[in-house]
Image (cartoon, rainbow, N blue to C red; front, side, top):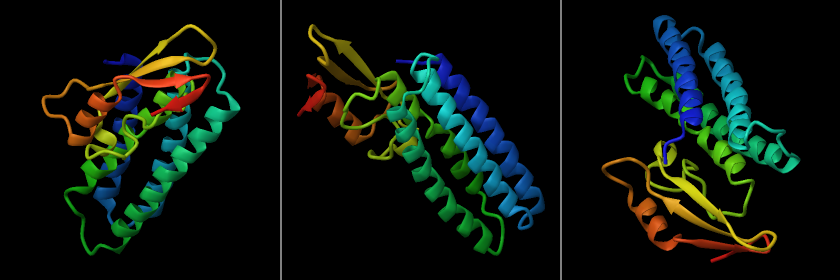
Length: 186
């Protein structure tokens, strides 16, 4: 299920991260602290933007804001460990550019939290709980049912030729997951 708005946000953030990482490579190892600060600022900005876009451009609820802060804190912890590795290395590593770019894909978690209105779903695409990590291209298809807080939600495999084993299992097991009276039934 392609989402153009999320794709545009991810593409912009990927470019910003790429520009910052390319700049760091050209002056490595000087500037690693500034690089880390720039990435952290962009991640904060784009996590919030993704949640806002996912929720339909309306106000971010307090619950969604709290979830976004938690998602961001998780990514910043990964960034902190990555930055230590970068700072401690004796030379530039070719894989760092691709690794840094993966942070852009992490904004799909707050996007899907907003899109699914913070329903108590068992996982979010790109949350790192599957082999594909942030590179997941799956989605949720949430169908409202009669009654307040009643939904059937389907894990939809993304547009990829190969899907990781966990996502394939999710598609089989979560077809659908049932939410009744706002409570997840597994």
